[in-house]
Amino acid sequence: MSSQQPRLQTLAQLVPPLSFNMHKGDCGRIAAIGGCDEYTGAPYFVASTALRLGADLAYVVCEKDAAAVIKSYSPDIIVNPYLRSTSNKETDGLAAASPDEKIAPLLDKLHAVSVGSGMGNDLEIRNTVHRIIKATRERELPLVLDADSLAILAVSPETIHGYRNAVLTPNAPEFSRLCKALDVDIENVSSEKAAMLLAERLGGVTVVRKGKVDVITNGDRLFVCEETGGLRRCGGQGDILSGAIATFLAWGQQYKRGAWKHTGEIKNEDVVMLASYAACMITRHASFLAYDDCGRSTQSTNVLEQVDMAFDNKFDQILQAVKPSKQ
Figure (cartoon, rainbow, N blue to C red):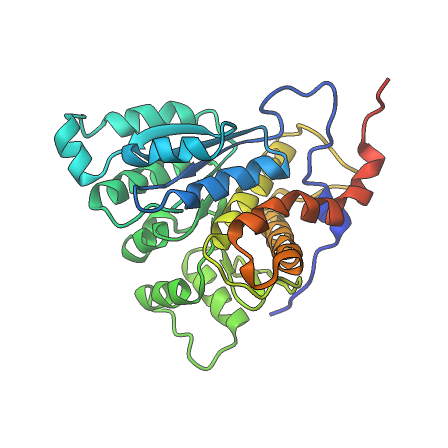
């Protein structure tokens, strides 16, 4: 098992160089699937992070009762109230297949999808999200799975097994539950080895084990992100990370399609690991900046407000060389 840190110059190749010839959507179309009446902030953090990093379009697909609240947070996010809880499905007369029929055309537009943030535990929503995960995989779209979506995988790991375009982002309790469900023995091994064992059991899916350091592995390769973060552990930072990973994955998808090229080449099989590391680095640095500014009062909204500064601190100097002329 060997661990290495990717070079900033390598990570920067995933970032689309802005050009006057680009069109809306070229820098990424991302969707956050989640959000119920109890958890409206989580998908907002995912989508808003994507926009602050430079994605062109960010969608939220949420439960009907959460839509108006999420819309009120920002006019920049496109909110689709396509999910139905068990109670709403019974009262509004919506056919069971309707959410799937509405979501499918959206998936066809996207470059990456994040699922699980603010999803909750309603059985009807969970079943719909399970089908969305399968539909996303069928389209070979990059996929980030966090929060309540990880409970789906604990029951049905075959849904994601072997899909190397997927990233799981468990925190410590979620990681333990996944390992237990998949019969991964993590006793007396390091956190790095435990993450590798889980990734191997899932057939090469990339696992980002969040913690004091972020361990990133697909079972073959290992990165450890030791970027200094803030000291606050407020809820919502994992959603910011999910949005950042989805954005870098979307850029990686475009990079693989030849939408642009920086100096040098990234192998297609390396994109997911590099995108995950870049997102961890940016999120942790944004957390550091927020804590440096706000101290104990730091909330995830403060971290969100530092995402663009964190990006500039890491990449701006490297990207200066590819900025277009104003002529």
